[in-house]
Image 1: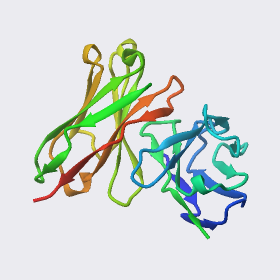
Image 2 (image 1 turned 180 degrees about the vertical axis):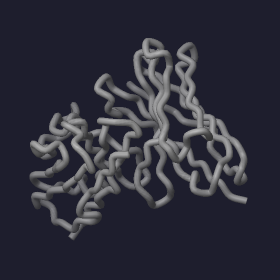
Image 3 (image 1 turned 90 degrees about the horizontal axis):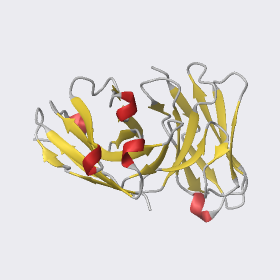
Length: 109
Length: 120
C-alpha cells in the first residue's frame, strides 16, 4: 500500500498567516493527489485535485503544489482566515487501496 | 443540488452484520463511481472501498482491512449505493460516509455520515 505522511500533525497559526502543510507519498504517485478540509462534526470538503487544481468554489487563497519527484506535495493557505481553522487531509488516487494522510489540524494561535 | 443521505447505522455486537444505504439525488447517479470512507471517533479518514459504474461492470475495490467482510453494491434504478458489513469488529466503529466520485477519481461530494458502533 502507498503510505501518505502529513506534517505537521498540528499547526498553530494566526489570522493572516501563510501556512503550508506537507504530504509525502511512499512512492511516486505523479499528480494523483487531493486535499480535503474537514471542520468538526462535518463531512470533508474537496479543496484541491490533481495536486494543484482548485476545486470550483474554493477560495483562491488555497493552493496546491507537487514536486517533480511525485512524492512530495504541499497545501498552502496564503492568508489564513477564521473559517480556515479545521483539519486537512491529503489522499492519493494513484493506486488501490486509496490512502489518506493522517491529517493536519490547524489551530488558532 | 447534489445530495447524499446515508442510513442504517447503529449499535451492533461484535461478529454481527449491518447494511448501510446511501440515497443519492441531484445528479445522474448511474454515471458515477461511488466510494465509502469511514472515520473512527477522533481519528483520521480511512477509505473503505469503491464501486464503479455499469460501463465498468460494477466492479469493486476494497481496503485490506475490510476485504472479505464488507461488500459494496448499487442499484442505479433506486439511485442508491450500499455497504454490507459482516463479521464486525470493535475497530469498525466509525462514521461511514458515502462519497460521489468524479471522472478523475476524486471525491467531490460527501454525505453527512452515519455512525456505526460495534460493541457488546
